[in-house]
Image 1 (cartoon, rainbow, N blue to C red):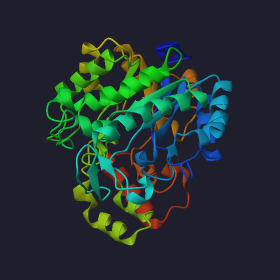
Image 2: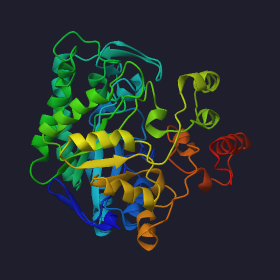
Image 3: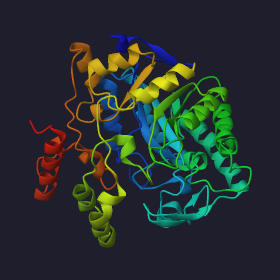
Image 4: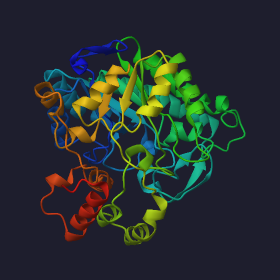
Length: 408
């Protein structure tokens, strides 16, 4: 299988072309790593993956959405070193996703009024948002560079800059969230200014020994957001700025969240774990109108990704519905250098080793999205590994499986 051939991201060579995607684990505590987070990523590394990515690490206090996320700062370098040392001992490389959530947070978590490209209200948090001043943007860009240096100290081989999904860089890129009238708003070229500032700091800090990936959208996934041609322009600019690889994704957390993950959001399961009663019952009543379902199919981003493969020269990382050996080989055969996987490595952290034994292996995910529904309150976990779920959640899972045709 081509999957098991080595390949490079900038100066970093991976033993094979598989990458554990930066799917939010929900396994941190007090914005620091835990033994659970360590054990999970070590199991993935031992399971044969080429590189495993620790999910979303905030570059500063205002970048945080949850206390289960990492805050990449010197105080957590030592426990992160324990994780990266273990990953390296298993023969894999280690990456960490860095970013700023922008308006996707609350005052209590962010330490102040949530900030974004423009002043307004984010219904999905829900919270009022303050538009960032230019001097603050310079500080945040520097924080991206500082995060890369901290990642190096912690033993990471690569960083993945989050520039998609409606987080802060994406909020500047998208006309849906960027209504500024200064040099950071208006035309797409202007809206890329903040991204350029961040990338210049990242590339300077990465130097010659760290790989830099950027996750960016191929579409925002709704009318009024970025479309394919806009996103191609962004990707070409990232290539010009020196990114070593681009992770091709799509969707917008505050407008089209299921465009990222596809399928149906289990509203009852998600609200079951919510602590605030007003939020629990509000989302239970209105969630199906706020969170639009998106049809799932294996390799669901491939058609869009092909457009980017034709137009770009740098290595591209495919993510989205890669759950079988057949699908992975198809993606690699079409010229994508790497494949990222999230759910395939949840129940089967040794999924890559299983493919070595059986190239036709399928991870068996039934795409009910329970793992996503709970990760905003608890750690990410498959429903198949939860034998004593409440009756209401079990019933919802069975209903979704019947609708998906995966109830066999």
